[in-house]
Length: 279
Image (cartoon, rainbow, N blue to C red; front, top):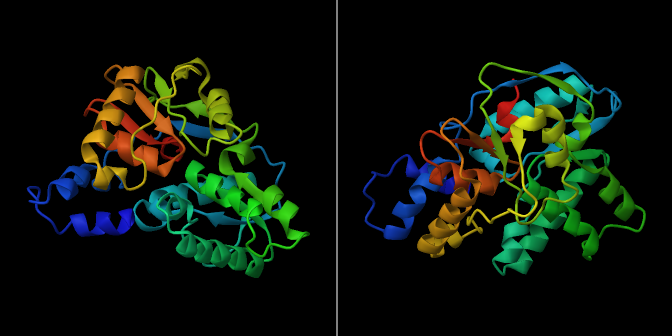
């Protein structure tokens, strides 16, 4: 729904009379790359331990429909790692947010579609870079969706984070690097903190993260549309906790969090997915 709304917002004036849609317009536009950080992490040496493996990329709804640069960047990373990217087998939405919205039948249909797509590709590695997608896809193994006893462990093992695959890849810090980078950990889907571990290795002391300060961004699926005042208040609370200084950046690995924080942040603070930092 959100990527579709982003396409529609290009046709709408800035003073939309429907308050909820008008207030959500900034978040919808934030799905694009217009306010993305400039790349400043440049790979020097690639970790090639997965060289020769075959993988399919599960890009997620935002990267598929609203911000294809993420998908392009992920493909470049996998090529650098020596991983062969197979053609898209026809994945659809992971279905995570449909479950939150109380639509289990529609969610199950999407989940089974994705399982069949993975099977049709030969059950390869399935690489994700959105924390919400990873969370949603991992949950398939805990449901009766038709995965056989042999497939269940393979599904778990072959669902991998792109950040995890980067391993010991080293990076050169470019001139566009900000003084500090605040890492936003998603409320759900952080899993084993692969994104955080990768960013700590790549950025060193430039990365700022406090385990005791992990606020919600306030996006919450359709909360942005159904309760925009609450959503904006939560986003403001998160930014107050992070207290970024002019020139700082906020990065995360969740497409919803990027959308929310990018729309709420002041103009002198850049917010993005960590993929957008890679040159």
